[in-house]
Every structure is written in structure tokens, then in C-alpha cells.
Length: 448
Image (cartoon, rainbow, N blue to C red; front, top):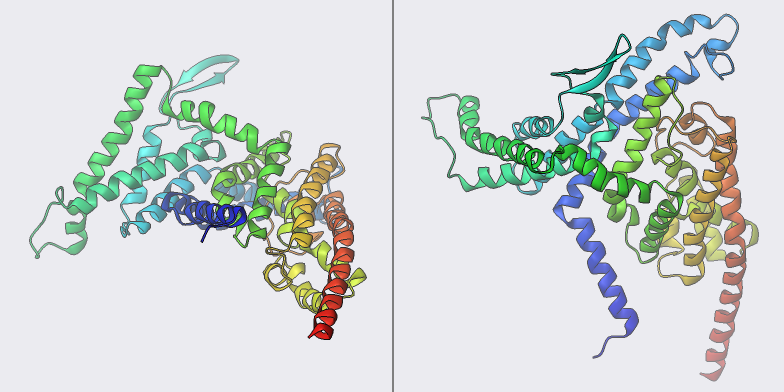
């Protein structure tokens, strides 16, 4: 039986989505960043406390600026240090987490590999830094800049983690390089010798490749990946058109019943988390906040109340829908939407494979993302410097993520209101669809 064009398209889309969701390298990146999320949250909360509790600077909304509460400012160095200690090790943390996840997919759960991966990554970093001493620029040796340990090194960290884990797992699984010691030798000592040659070979290959690359191209591998891959990708994902395109594609996948975030997260997660870390570092250093688009921006203006900003759909249904099935599902989904969970609505209404609801489901986040970007760019919203838990209710989420910007909280509520306006015509259209279906059913019964 010949397949229709629609079936061919669906089969192709499902194959691509299934590949990206289950392919071990994409999965390792996605799961690796999920592992380091607690580090990001700790750093974000410390930045939040530094900003909203201990900040004594004039003009800031902070508990320390309340008369009699200035003593809270004494604790700011503690929170700044903790934030620095988490946000500036994201590159190192990513190497460890991603390499471990990829090895796990090969059935190799080894405590040595993350250390080898971290060592391999550091071997690709420049240890000579140009700095200014007493007004004179000098080269200082044996120094590891925070650009390598922090957010700027995330892309190189990802590639190094994947390459290191691939090499190490292949060497370990061949058993040709394992040193077998007598049973009398303690197990932990024996294991160290078993993985000795795989560790040595992996380190030599990664560091050797970095050295040869430097000889041939007169540029470190780190800088090459940063400037040739990371910078162009950042320009795409970090631009408003690129960001809106990727987020819209996520919603399109959801429409077809595919978890869009799981599929596309490996594409953008390094940028969104890296931009957050860069904003946090800039805030602590008293410098201008560089990025508008980052992971908390996504949570507040693109997926608040869930993918598609379905909180707006719930409000539109409760106000304008005449369909009892829609109204019942909306009432059940409302408590979940407050905490940014919308699977009951996506699969219960459903939005999946529902053209009438699928169109605003894609359009609404694009419009609210553009709105959030403009409001942030003109200064109505503070730029996001910390990551509030994704289940934080609207207004509070943006308020906390922006370090206490009331405008950001208002803008998040405004995003839901705009999404509601976008959904209303389609909810009304669904009423007519239900009426037509009812008339058709009556006609069929009368004909029968």
C-alpha cells in the first residue's frame, strides 16, 4: 500500500527525532548538563542572596538596604565566593558529567575516566596568560584562566568529554591493554593497573592531538573550537531570530507528540547555561550583564506555564470555550500549569496532532519571546542573573531570576496575557468545530 505524503513526512520526522533523542552522544550531553544542574542552582541561589539580601549598593532592592538591616551586607562575600566557586567550574563539571554519561551508555562505569577526561581537557588549555602588572603587560606562565574552567569553555569541554570517553571505553573494552595482577592484590590496586594503559593512551592521544594541531595551525585547539564552532553557533542560537527558530521548532516537535526539549536541548543547552553563568560572573564583578537570552529567560518568557505557554490556553478555554471536554481538562490542568507542568493539557486536550490548537501553540512562545527580549532590551526587565527552579510560579520566577526586578515579574505575567489573546480566536474556532461535529453526528443518526 502506497504511503501518503503526510505518512512519509511523519515517518521521516519520527526517525530523525528518535535518532536525536536516543543517539548516545546527544543523550550524554543532555544528561550531563542535567547532572550539573544542582551546581548551577546553588550558584544561582548564592547570586540571588548576594543581590536581594546582602547588597548594600544604592538603588538596589535588597533587605540590606532596609534601615537596621545593613549588617546583612557582611555576608555578601560568602555568597559571592560560593557563586564564584560554582559558576566558574561549569566547564570542568561538564567534562566530568558528560564523559561519565557517555561511558555509562557503553556499559563502562569507571571512576577513573572523569579524572582522565578532566586532565585531557586541561591539556588542551593554554597555561600562559597575558596580564597587566603595574601598568605593563606581561606573559605569566603556569596559570589556568577561568575562561577554561567556566562557561566560555563549555563547547570545548563537551567535545573533549565525548572524545575522551570514546577512546577510553574502546581501550578498556578490548582487554588487550589490561594488566592482570594476582588475586592476592587488593581489588582497588588491581583495578588501577587494569586501566593504566587505557588511561595513558587516552591522555597521550588527546594531548598529542592538541600539540600537533598547535604546531600545524599556530592556534590552540581550544581557540580553534571557540572561534570556528562556538562563536558562529553562539551567534545563531544567541541571536533573537535563531533563538525563536529553535524554540518554535521545539513546539513543532511537541505538536507531533515528540518531546521537543529532549530532542533539541543538546543543540542549545551549552549556550543557554553558558550565558547564565557569564551573566552571573559579570554581576559579581560589577560589570554590565552581557546576555539577554539564557536559560532563565527561556523559563520565564518562552515556556512559562509549560511549552507553548499553555497557561494562556487554559485561561482562554475557561473564558471562551463552550466545550465541556475542554473546560474539564483545563480545570484539571490549571494547578499543574501554575508550576509549569503541561503534559496533562498537551496529551489530554490534546494539542498533539490538533491543527487548531497546534498553530497558536507554536506562535505564542515566538511572540512572547520577542516581547520579553524587547522589554529587557529597553530596560523594563532586569537581565537574568540566576536560575530559579523551573517549577517556580510565574512572576516569582522572573522576579527571582532577575535579581529582584519587578518589571521582569510583570513581563512574565504579561507574556501569559499575550499568549491568552493569541489562543482566544482558536478556542472560539474549536467551539465551531465541536458544533459542526455535533451537527454531522445528528445527520448521520437521522440517515441511519
